[in-house]
Length: 229
Length: 348
Image (cartoon, rainbow over all chains, first blue to last red; front, side, top):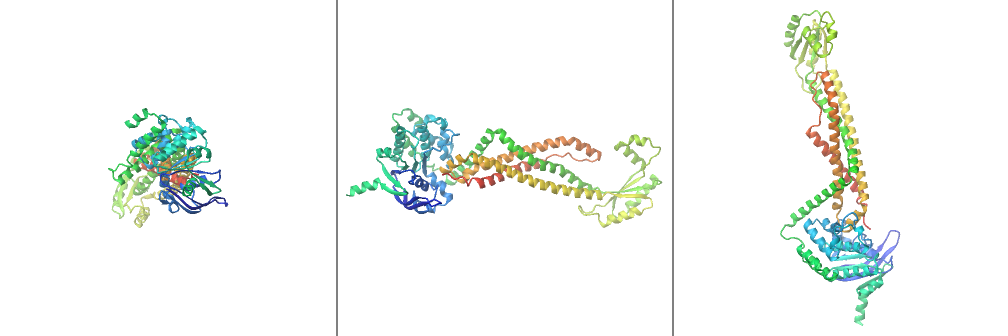
């Protein structure tokens, strides 16, 4: 689903965010991307969604080679990726329903279809009774769940999250992570950037650790090597 | 739908509910296979435009004062040249009409009697280049003057008729737009040489001068219209620049979740079109009001010149042109703003 091969990202001014990064995420897999801030977690997510382009190396997402993908195709790439952000990035002057409906509106779906899918997505995150409210009256956890509903409403095969629990207390964080695990159980590939190592370790999922733009450990590879021994 | 709401009522645990709804979500068909893809895409296209259109109406009506102020600026800028054109065009139409009505006035010497004048008129009718000769006898002239010009009292005080007899000679019309042809000049010479003639007046020069003045004014109005159209473009472009910057956050978010540039551009283009059309309508109202106020004095003026000067007004075509010109300028201004500012907004 995601394939990084010798990917480097240098910013103007010489700062090197990623240094010849190699990793692979299979279809239907779930992994956490962790490391200190500045280790390159967000950069990885930005490269996958083409918010930025790699300086060198090859990235393949959902069968598409991103370096060969023209700017005009970027919107369609992003539609196949559900994204969840630390700051939620909701439209505060629109209702919960409208926020979740946005990806479907962009795709040009009819009102009936939109209504059905939005309610299914809101039901999934447990906010069906709050569709008429505005994001600012919701709690942080609820806002994040609206963001998640928006990310999954058009059923993308890949779900990315950048510090989705960054502003939440441990209890809520665990709930949000469970929600991601549920999506994964239904075949969605999930990649979550988070520095909350204690939470991640308790979830026993694959963990990719970055340091200074390099992959320093991959729990899956570690398990495999243990198995081989 | 029923299933959806039905199941949500018997939720037993968050996990179970999530599982159920996920299953339902994955059961939904990706797209209805019955409709052909091209028709579906066209339907989506229309739908997106409708959505953008309705959203624009909503946006304009949510801030009525600001909307009206912007539209009024556009309206005033459009009303000025439109009003000038509305006044100019009937004058121009008349000046060409006068061209065909050109005439030579032969004032006869005071001693010439009406009978002599009548026989002279008969002789002149046979001259080449003359299409018609009209005799206005001394008494007729006096009568006309009394009726028209409000000199009645002054004339009553005179002992005898001071007016000479007048022969109005109409030359055969030369092709429109050409200067007085050779024939006309020759005719003029012949008329001036008549022993009975006291003076011959040919009212061509003032008409040519009027036309020259009109051409200058028209050029000026065109220049003014061009400048004001440029002004409208800048107004719309700047208003939309602010609208775009105001919605920066929103634009970033919808770019993040896969909106195409066309999708993002659409509501702003409709906004520009809306401002332009509204400005056009305001311009129409302003011009109509102004012409209504001018109508009385202009009619009086026309009556003094004993002209059947037709009432100036904006025709239906003119009105449509005015409003659609407003719309076109608004759309173009929006295109300028969108081109310059939307590309600069990229999500991070």
